[in-house]
Length: 185
Image (spheres, rainbow, N blue to C red):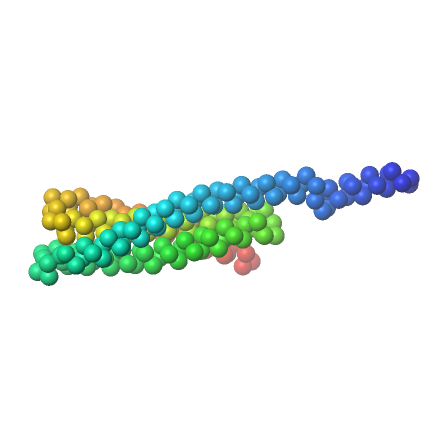
């Protein structure tokens, strides 16, 4: 074998086994996965920021509600649902960011895709929880400003938000379980 043939074989082996266009394509694929995950995380982050602002505003509004208000019990249940969903959202957003950070260092494309999927479902969970927080605090706002005509609409919106958040959480748990089962074999 002459020197040129040997070099050609080494270059070909390098492309096949160690890099070259295949590695470049894999890197591009990982970047696309990261970009997609980051879009989901950005949407959830915006909703979380809006929910955080609603919480800050809600702290002042709660103080304006009279202690003998007929809606005080409902306000408490709305705040409890908002609190539960806020805690869930904070944890889910953290999980989304952690999963997205692992995409580029994954040992295979399949694992990278699973991290991207986990990032997206976590971001969806954070987003749906943030919407529950926002809706619950709309109720507090309506009660504190004596906008009783809006209460029925907000109650229905809260039921819808809670149902949607429950479905998103179910889907998140399902995806998480399927991925865990996939790698526990």
